[in-house]
Amino acid sequence: MNGLPIPFLSDTDDTTPFPPIDTAMRDPNGLLMAGANLKPARVLSAYQQGIFPWYSEGEPILWWSPDPRCIIWPGDLKISRSLRKVIKKQQFEISNTREFRSVIEACSGPRHGEDGTWITPDMINTYCALANLGHAESIEVWEENTLVGGLYGIVVGRVFVGESMFSHRSNASKIALVALAGSGRFDMIDCQLPTEHLISMGATSIPRDDYINALRILSRSNGKANGNTAKE
Image (cartoon, rainbow, N blue to C red; front, side, top):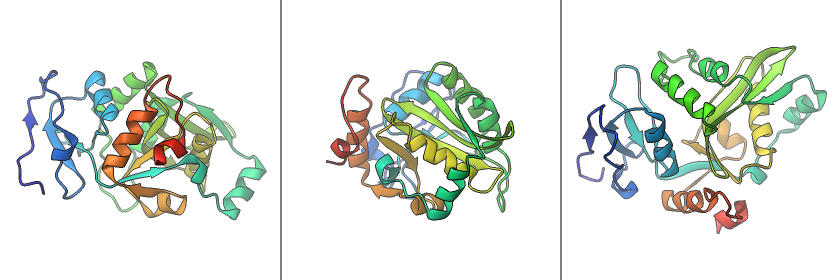
């Protein structure tokens, strides 16, 4: 850890800024601050600075900025031979932010071997508000008019900060990720923390300083930056 206590804000505090990123604890995953609230402006500001909320029901809101950071460069996405065969069958339909609330609610459902969820009702309402404002998007995967998979996240310029994904059919969440990477709208997909699933699809970890630098470049609304520029 960095040896310093983290700030703990009141849930009515709308004005105190986030502390500098380099003050985040190094263990376990870059805890930076606790408390405050989930008002859309506060949450959006966090993502724009490379910070995200992650906590369990009944806990204070915890704000994180991991080092290193897990990301995917869209051009480096790995699509297995078996997944390519599934995609070629064209049995799934893809949509963008048609059913944002349905996606986040599906992501909040219980996972195999896990108790509870970190996607609380307050988080659902905040992210839906951000989607209504154009700052959050979802990718939906449909099979015969039934939602069977998808993902959602925050949009910061040409960066998509992925929050969660779900799959009710084999490969459905992978297909959502392929659709996101292939949209041509994003130069970096932020996965936050690594998992075997993401690593198998081409995710890599980069130093937080490099991530913040790429985020600054790619968040410029009119800035012309691509994955290669950000990598440099």
